[in-house]
Amino acid sequence: MTKRPILFATILLAAATTLPLVVSPVAAQQQNDRARQIGGKFMCMCTCNQVLTQCNHVGCTTSTAMLKEVDQGLARGDSEDTITQAFVQEFGTKVYAEPPHSGFSLVAWSMPAVYLAIGLALVLFVISRWRKRPVHVAANSAGRSGISPELLERARAQAARETQD
Image (cartoon, rainbow, N blue to C red; front, top):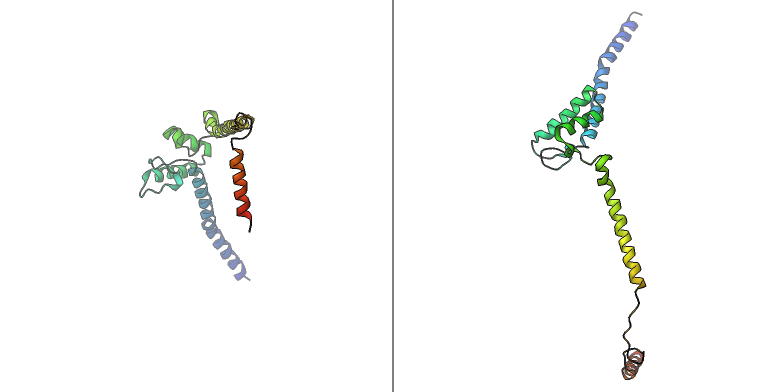
């Protein structure tokens, strides 16, 4: 009977010691995924014009340092807004991968729709003007078409000859 409590205590101790090893990588992976998600909203400042998480410069120390800063902010428990504000204070608004949806940057988001509406209105206006335009037919003094009756008769005779089998 004394073996069972010892065995139970051993299993409990083993589970307690291995649980942090199992839980810690999951938490680290979640933090790493969160860091990649936040880092994807910024541009790398090494002048490569690429998103921070996709910078492919060999040995780029700028992207490494920026991603480390995001990781450190998450480890401290900083919110995404706090990390974003820190990057904007350090690098300016050019750090954004896409302009924010507020303030003057809202113009950058709305102008394509405005240009599309203006272009569509312009095309519809031009088409309506073309449709209302009178049709000009070249006519001779008798008000008939410019083809002489002799040419018309010759064309009809030729068509009749060519269509007969």
